[in-house]
Amino acid sequence: MRRLELPGRGKDMPRLDQQDVKLIKKIGISGLKEQTQQILELKLRQQPENDGKQTPKAGNPVYKAMHACRASSRQELSRAHRIPAGKELTDNQVDSVVNLLTRWIAREYNFYIEEEDRQKSLSQF
Image 1 (spheres, rainbow, N blue to C red):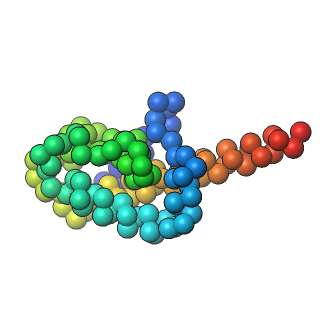
Image 2: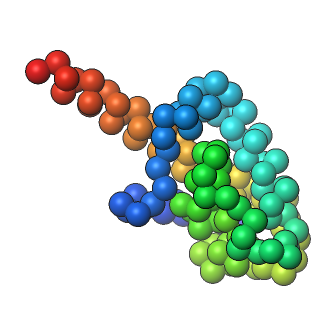
C-alpha cells in the first residue's frame, strides 16, 4: 500500500484546540493511534449506509483529522486517496489511513505547541 499524502495547512482546514491537546497529552500518541483504529473500524471499515454523514466534525482530534485528510467517508477516501468504496477495507488500507490520521494529528500538535511557545515569548516584551 502506498503512503497516503498529508494535506496542506490552509486557513479553512480544521485545527486542534486546547481540549484536543489536553487529550493527546493525557492518552499519548499510542493511545491516540489505538483510538483512531477503533473509530475507523466503527465508521469506515465497511461501506456505511449513511456515507458522508457518519463522521462528526468536532469532539475528538481523530474526527478533525478525518475531515482535514479527506477521510471522513468512503466517497472521500475513494476520491482523495484512491481507496475504492463499496467493499470492506483491507487491514493494509485501514493501517494506511490510521497512519495518515496519526501523522496529521502529530503534525498539528507540534504546530500548536510551537505557536503556544511563540505566544509566551511575545508576552515577555
